[in-house]
Length: 347
Image (tube, rainbow, N blue to C red; front, side):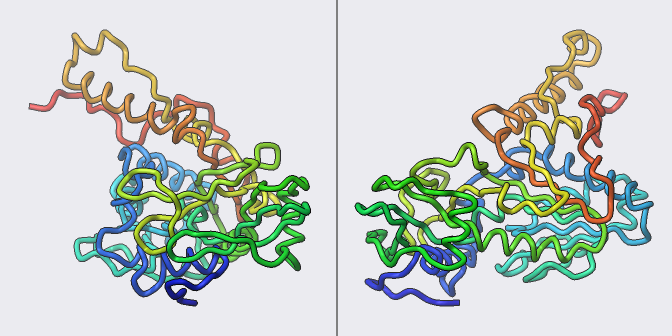
């Protein structure tokens, strides 16, 4: 990994890689990413339960194999994989193997059943799930100069920028194919080629099952004219400064990442197909089972956040089936959650 010195100019890819994953990078710290931004995993345990439900569907599509893998890419502190394993029915949990893929050290309190890896295992049979991973795969940034030529944007550790050489080679081909820039000075794009390659490599680890990437996303008809590069520090959006003090992220061109047979839908559509609708519980439950009503109301609020328009519900889900039918998220809404309201009141 290339380290970037103070005052040295480099492309955004090298700068962000050093700031996030270098020896003193943000993702190697004890706090972890949750200290700087909040994902669907942190928003509600309903998200892990929905992913567990998806894993159960993959299990059925695979014919209930003797060993069922769940791989959590960019696992943070292992919150998702732990939540998924805890939400599985006993018969599935007995066959499930959990893997957390992360460059940081393994948390001491993590469930002993979860294997901690620096890269995904080979020969996965089951579900590989990448929640907000690709947006943190560093990419180069291009900007159109006064002559209408896209050039690489160079940056220093203090965040100052200048234009470098014209974009060329495979990066220029990617721009022309996926994010063509009009000859208008100041227009910008993030060159998503490294993300396409990382995603293809992750999918290649799956022998049979499903790979899913969930992220901030845009497609060819919604590319933002000035790009999306930004920073997050302690939960607040900030200028992207590649000094290790903040998360650096950019939305993902998920359509460019999609391999043959894959498709993209919104998180709102995906979670509704998994029984997360945000619908309020029936009012009569308040009089017959008040404690259950309060729990169901709280869950409805969390589900509404996960599926909100203009928020988490707008995230993209890239589904890449490998040797299984593309029907795992076509079930109509209303199938219910893995963990339902109990039939008796808690004492």
